[in-house]
Length: 203
Image (cartoon, rainbow, N blue to C red; front, side, top):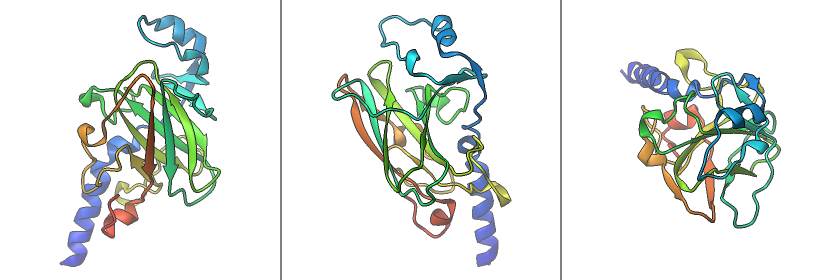
């Protein structure tokens, strides 16, 4: 009975984390300046000069990000519990449209930072203050994908803003949402594994 229940939980966990698994397919296509021209905005800060490239699906990507400027309109992100010091920590920034949360094609900004220590700090520059959410995973093998194994259970560690409780379904937008004022904000995300969740550690 326990074994059957465990398998059912694993299946549910793997299926319901498909949105997280699919959020990290990077394929450079547009140059940053081309993207800026095609998506010229008014009343917001232009951060396009900091893009490394833009994916074919229109997601701007920053690789090897800088530290944030003091008191700037940036998200100062700390990621903890990095176990294997290899590959990249990938952070996907989502806007306040709850329907787009964890949709790989609706990411506002993707940042890839080297997993160089157990805790790393890097910057997500923002175009404007507002309400956001961040989903993070550890791309250990640098294949630009959130790897999964048997029953689609994630093989790589992951986390989310506000460090919500992970169960058999991915947290909703409001559980991960936070507000960023003009002066920016500090944010800390703790990585966990699917094994942690199945053992009862959920944040």
